[in-house]
Image (cartoon, rainbow, N blue to C red; front, side):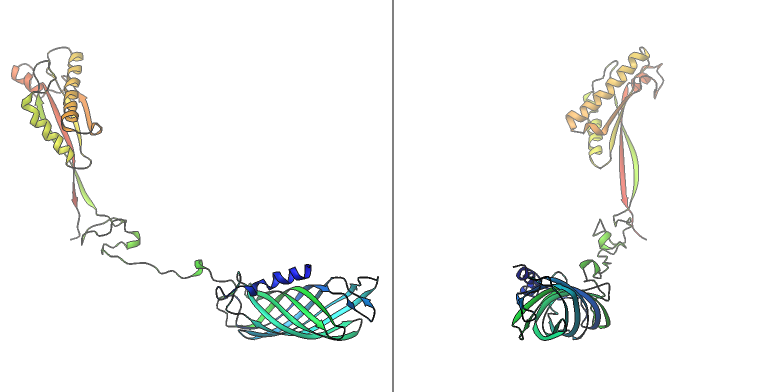
Length: 357
């Protein structure tokens, strides 16, 4: 049972249909190396008595030549001078000499290993008694480190002299020479090894290749940044709308609705625009009272912008300055009227696209 299972495992590569061409093993090469094998002996007549060998390990060497992509020849030698008998206390010296002809499935690969099948013929010496052996073998092999060949397989041989079979599994390591027809050095080529095409196309002609262009389709002659996006000349401007209040009042009079509406429209016209509302008073009253009155006037304008014109509160800043910033003398009625005010300052951002001359 153990022998059959080992044979099935090592023969399994031959059950797979060709999946991809093996690029690892060269087309032609010579090799020399060593191997270890596990023999499975059936009950047989060893020296005229009904007896048999215990399963045993053998060590040996091999030399071969792969003369075409699909064919190779090999000669090998192996020996164990302490093979124990199954039913007695005897030991025997067993030496094997074989030659084999192999057919390689060079267009088939199993996890990078190339399978093969072959026939063999040779002699087996048991305590200097020779007999002729012949059989079949099958296995897989793969190259490593440029010139090292790993060979795994199973072999079965038959003795017509005593009519018995014996089998073995083996693992060999070989050094290759006179290598030719190698499609890759020693390791199978992977997708990471494939050359990649450098993509350098610049569809919009802005000087930034498509692979790095975050803003495709820019206008001809546009000045762009390193991401391929249009460069703008940014200018910030302030527009001031002023409204005036009755004495000691913070309500907006109807006659100034246009100023508030105009400020609201301008702040909505562009990204980055903001409104700053500054409240002021005349000098009548205490500084503390006038400070609060100026803040109420600024807040009144803010509320009108939000409630009536849907300006977002996040773009509005308010500040009360009390009586500290008059624009006219407070010693006349006309001057005090000009100081009772709120300045609506619209901070706008004007962008102008830059182009090459």
